[in-house]
Length: 278
Length: 348
Image (cartoon, rainbow over all chains, first blue to last red; front, top):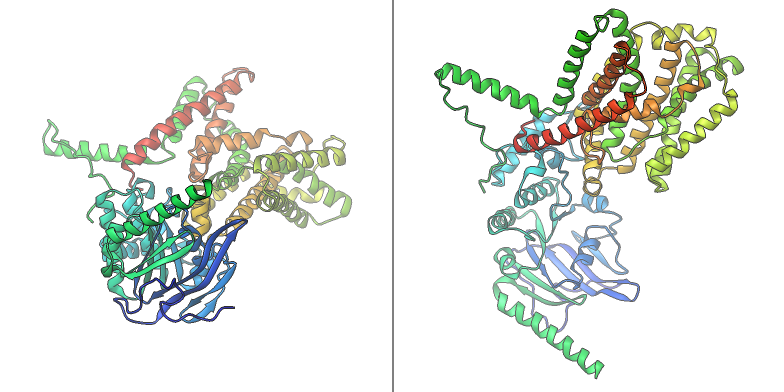
């Protein structure tokens, strides 16, 4: 097994020092030397990543860069081939999504995990229902759901509405609310702004800002849209072809810089392909 | 951050007769809207219209004897429909339950007459047989990945084969020692319908007010989402197959005692198909995710009223399937249209 790398180390030598993010504190999550292959395809190469307590880390990258594979490893959906994961300094083997959730790592997959046919409050309490004897305590769940959504500034008129009737932003907000109130300490948000209008995206960005202010939840946001994510992230990691090639504080970078890196990498790949063909 | 989920209530509007009349009109409209939004509303209205029609067509329709006859028709369908609602809502189906029904009476006969098992224990073992068949259906469907349609088709035929081989396709008489328990289960006039009402009430509560019901809806509505939430999809499906098997065995015993005979012709698809039709007419979605136990009861009642009513007014049994098929289509079209209304202004 590999030895733990120092804070911010383990990245390419070209990476700027990433230590000293805006929120001080120990790492709640560390990923050390994680690799993953699928047959002949190498999805992740020696990934090192760390997440501080209360920090929002944006994990950016194009399609096929390895973001989804890394997310699946972090949420316990699939194991890495090599490397290790440390949660609160302790090495953990994530056996399943349920196991990862029990350890405090929860994932929000866009709005896929909600049940259209159930009400907002039943979705929020799914598998963690309030009961009185064998019966559901719907009154208590309604009241708590209402309170939590109000606390988060999610202005739904009724928690009795079926989720099928909500907008994409509202559904995403409920999925996030469910994860937050499941005692998650690490929240993985998979493309939380995908296919959303400006108003809905603003709702989700506000929610993530609120999470930052609580400081007891650390968040990894996986996204394509650099501009929106830089608004709320403390730090940015860029994943390219299975490697983390960039690790900087959000305030020290810009959309222009990130675009330049991605475009330069694309041009280099095209030139290499032409040379091979020639 | 201030988006609303519900549409604002429709304004009652000022009625020409003044504020009081306008308020009354608004209340009536709201009550009508709330009623129309209930999944069971359509089939309840159809049932009431059918009762009025057959009552006017035949004065014998609302006599005590005929009502008892309707209860004997509806009880087996409605009880099996409860199980089918749980299965359909979680995205599965049981075609074998009609053969569990046919086999359970014979199993009781074999246990008591050939193995001297006490009657009460024999009844319990029959119910256990239904649960075991349900478990097998669950295992083949969940663990081996065979669709429930094929699984239960196969187990149903196996049960039919066992029944025909062991009975030589001859009816049997009810064991003497079972007459006492028989009165409780079906041989007294109102026993079946009392059981039916109790089971419908109990499982309506289970479906709407317990984790089992909630998780059943979740599994049928979004199996991946339910699984992500930590629900054991396999456990829910096993439980629902076993419940349906249990009801099949129970109904088999009830029919045995009610008809005072153990007949191989009791086994078959008819009760099962009527039960599924009743569930669907009552608002259960074949695609999973939604349904109601009370709706299934009302759907079963509708089919029973039709069957009894047409017999009573002297219509041949031959065109009945046409009428049943038409009734299913009409009910489903009405349900689809009302579902749109519910989505537009649902407050339940």
